[in-house]
Length: 428
Image (cartoon, rainbow, N blue to C red; front, side):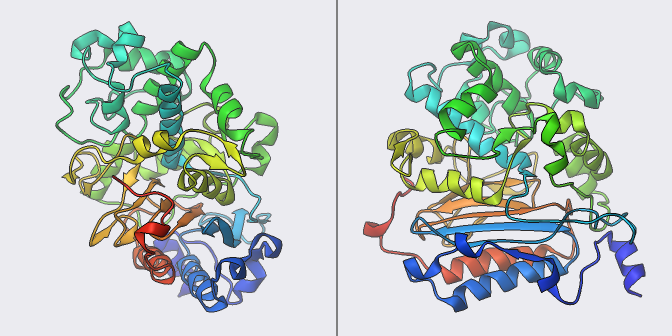
């Protein structure tokens, strides 16, 4: 019966004793330093174990910081070898806290901050039209679309043209040509429509035009190296691909209308997405909206730097006003015409809300980004936490959703709101 359920739900094998597939970084956790109880740590970890038991995520990583101190740093499951289609004899590679994972759309938060850092240096004005820097983008009515509109998913080019070959995704010149030729659905920024992958290519082109350097070099110089990251790169070097966790299409196969939304947002069905993201050409390419790779701890470190007002371990990464501009709400809560759910965005971040939002209850001071729906990376100034939950499954509407929501709720419960005078930052 278990085997039949696994086949029907496309899930991985889950052992009865989860300790056999769990990895704790004991030296990397110090909850007592910031007054976090063992009971709170255990409660949050149980919620992760419950998510793992759904079988939709062959591997999970977690990093949580509170008041700047890492209080959970753990992993569970496998990076390779325990997917729905893997056999008993498939070699299994454990998931550890050091395993790099693709962040997918959570990459957008990092790319967006790079653009705000360009503005801090006076190299761009985010309110300028993209065409000021890249005149060819003005074709077919896009002359007035601004950088800020694209960052906040109001740029009018939410998707690449239909029937575009998949291999165009790693051909930046061809995809730029297609985006320049594209006709916008609107140009005044009035309509919210999530730009799943297009906006990253636009940001890349502008950044490379004004700096004269590549976006991956800019990231390396101004963010990755100053913050001491091991990974945190767009794609993974060909020589390192063996270390990258595999991604699996799990859960019940989406049917209409969910399948329509998936294809509208991602350009293909879920099996096509699985094939693309495991293609070495995708994994080694530079795709600023969708293939930054690293660990949960590294993404948590990034959001902690933002909570610190742009500072990491005494190093100034960006100014506090740059962080505030990156998390400032743009537009009201509005139905997203791509995702078909109400969303609040800044110029680059998905924002929480009151009485409840994407980052849990009473999360108006929270900002972050999802990665293919299941990866949750955010910071909440109201609770002084940075959270990064990475996983390797691609379930859409599946039986794991209550467990995923329960994780977010548990984190919010165990880290209650603090007074406004204690908060490191607040949305304004």
